[in-house]
Length: 170
Image 1 (cartoon, rainbow, N blue to C red):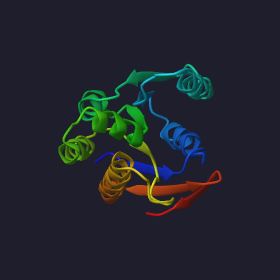
Image 2: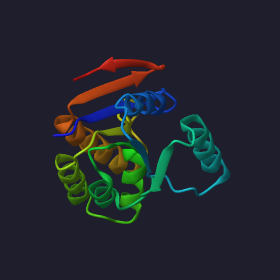
Image 3: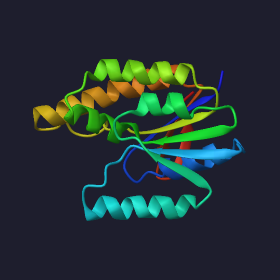
């Protein structure tokens, strides 16, 4: 069974950089970056540009803002290390598409269970702040917490990143 590594942290905590380093450490023939963001404004375009520049040209990038489980199933091979960045953006996309989020999370877990190469997944910890003031934001926070628990439970390693410092949880 291929290793599953889960990297969790707050905004600008250093989680993506840490996850990139963990993915490179597998020394796979190919590193694959599965991007879940949808570029909807100039700020997101700038973030995407910075991430791409930091990774360099040796990564193959696949955009999968909605079909994450299917993409993982197709792309997972023993000679590839995959980085998924990030689960909370994917969850947002699926929430706004009115998807069955429990089924989506179960599908993702199933695709990870059959992965034949290492997979590193990044997610935001959104439950450490104040209670959101609207129903949609509260639902997102709750769904993100449930998804993070599901992925952490099946991961071989789980890391929490704060201020650029990794703390191994599992």
